[in-house]
Image (cartoon, rainbow, N blue to C red; front, side, top):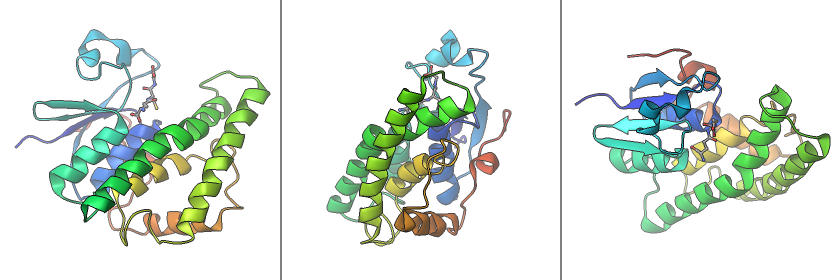
Length: 208
Ligand SMILES: N[C@@H](CCC(=O)N[C@@H](CS)C(=O)NCC(=O)O)C(=O)O
């Protein structure tokens, strides 16, 4: 069986989510660096893999899959890991992933892009995103006061999806100090077997 191939760039939060999930599941993968600055994500060959012209993409045999949330759910299903133990838990995992796409990812990734100079915006726009991120972080912090992980009693891909947003709060200059439950949960994730930081899970060039 050939290895799954993750296409992405090491600075990409959604690519990190896919790489981190595979690391936590103990799954090896090959890696293709997609040079966004050179426009490699809009080249016809890459668009055959990801029609949206974005990273990440995961090639698993004949399946070419994009959207990090969809990749996380695919991995959970394929390996029977981190997907929730019951139908109710699986539904809750999906709910968290849809929520983070809506409320958390844009409101952390965009101010991060502004602060890192990948995106230009007025300060009022930066502040609007940070305000919405804090609204979402308050909800998350409240939920994490009740459970060690988001769904059930162990880590799921819902945690990976949400962690892959919150991990970048510092680069977005969003202060996590008011969120003790989030910080405790991040610490639990970072202690899991297989956990790696994004710099360690995503190579800076192709890897077999
Ligand atoms: N919802 C997508 C977002 C992917 C995304 O925004 N990728 C960025 C890099 S982090 C990208 O490819 N940007 C280039 C573009 O959109 O043209 C996911 O979670 O996979």
